[in-house]
Image (cartoon, rainbow, N blue to C red; front, side, top):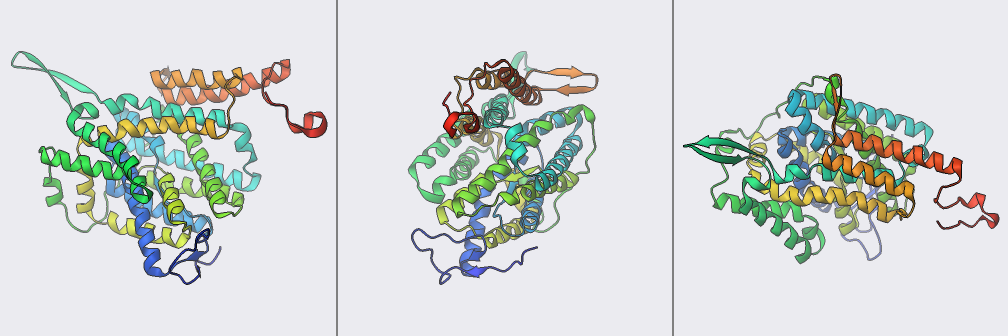
Length: 453
């Protein structure tokens, strides 16, 4: 394992134009601590949204997020900067599993997901990452990410329960945008405006700052109850949940593994591009580390983890890629998780604020799938690509359901399976029949030039 020491970058006080602070370097400790705490702020909004939306404990989620980040740094030999925060890919399966079997069953699904991801990491470490590209090309990964976000759309709007009061039908909404439309609208508008009004780190923290604006608006309207905060103690361990296992809901979590694989591979490639270092040899370690972090979260009741794009944004803005800053971030998050009062404060965020934030957030997850297509120049004039995206998206959005005995497969699982099957079956048949419209490989073309589709 690599040593945990870092070289001082320059004079330790500034980053010259065009230069970057590499992974094995650091600025002075006061500056490094400041940047590390900035990473904590960057992950706050997204990391806490997942437990708030799924009913998990924010403090427990933060605890395992911190432990996971520290473990990730150790397993990747202190060479790959990353913060492991809550993965949005878990929201739908956790919600469904909790509704059918309780929180402990959802935690069991997270644990199994982590074990599978860790196993994939071991395979990739010894076999290389090339097989991931062959199994999950951009058209497949983009489709899976998109259908997960779009499958969550109804949750952003929220559900209402009807009851009869004094002979009149009254609808009570306790979640989503409909729970408090005014507060939700204020939150959503604040996020949108902050995104375009401010540059740098402020603009990148638009969701967090928008939630704060919405929270203040909700407080003014009397929608915030501070009683749990007053009753909570200042110091103490988070609440842990013991996992239980129900094969009937494990199918809900299988697609999440594929998303986590894509996110981790993308993280390695992004950091490689920004630092100018080839970090492909760390892909297997990154997958194993995230799998182990998710497994630990499943053991104690935290949400599953993933590498965070929000923190890549901080690195891009500061040009500081030092892993020392992430050790500070992990330690800071660990300390905050030890304060029940802090966790109780996060839990007071009202439903209207979450409804406004998730209206944008879930849509962004869907569009991230489209972004994968665009960045990889997926050709939709090719019927194989078009069909691979079209069918799974409808399955995911409409939330198709298939019950087999005691096992229920819903839109995300069925959509993911259909994306993989449709792509590989159609591509194989098209190549066999000579009807494929994909670009020919350079090796098959005289002169070695690729023929465009």
